[in-house]
Length: 218
Length: 220
Image (cartoon, rainbow over all chains, first blue to last red):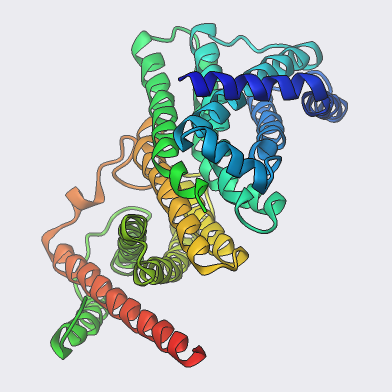
């Protein structure tokens, strides 16, 4: 537990000192949304809003998460290997990436609202789904980036390996958002969607904990 | 694995039976589908075989991670290759069928999305394998990806179709299941077809792994 806290703190400190990563991604998100606004105009229908929002956030996530293991050199990996058990390393990365992803998601949501308006979502469904989606996507991509970092050319591989893993989550999220547009939602429907998302998050984290030790050692 | 000539002959014999009987038997005359329902005997077994192959490869990947025997890695990778082959056959037969019943080669249907994503995942697996040179590392990392992707796909194929509002495929989202509606004469052809294809696929897998093993010996 203590190691996880320290490792997350280290990643946060690195991020705050360099700042180029989060600023770069933010600029990317803002400019993409601006381009979307130029192309579509302000008035777009809700389905297009949902699709564009998640696609842009997905690519931002790919950019943000892909460097989480790539930036660690072989010698530093050995250093971590001696300092902390593999499980804490992967959990710390997932926690950090989930934090990063939630921050990015909230900021891009704000930019999206400014440029494109906000459809009348049911917030009791939209906000938890958004949060669970951010956690799930960052967890799955953390694992994929760990896999990709062990092979030769990881930039291209990250996208190839990541898409099949993330698509299920993305479809669930889009489904949940579409449902959030409906009026007179009943609690059972909300719970059904959220529990599916929660299930997928739990599976991703459990698999990461079980499988990561095999990736970590040489 | 399959040993003995009788097992090996049983597979093609059952397939041959299903091809011939599938054209001869009387089928129920359903609206829109009509006689294309005979494609059930050829299209659906492909997916059965694909998932059996991917399941086999999952089992061998888990066994590889628990024992690190190169033999298990070879089985896992060849099962994936075999599964991809049958997946492509399943896609092709499905697309032809879809063109004649739903009017398009591709529709936005949960089952089709699931099929496409699983093919993507396993093609990514083969690319991952070819991008790592060192053998032990390649085996370990691809086994990890195999398990990770398979588990997420199981959720995807198991949970999503139930959440989706509608599907064109029978048995999902309010449509009545084909298996329930399948009358007894069709079952007499369908089950042998599925079993025959699975036996043949395992035979094929055996030949492929044997070839790989021979190649390794020759290269040494």
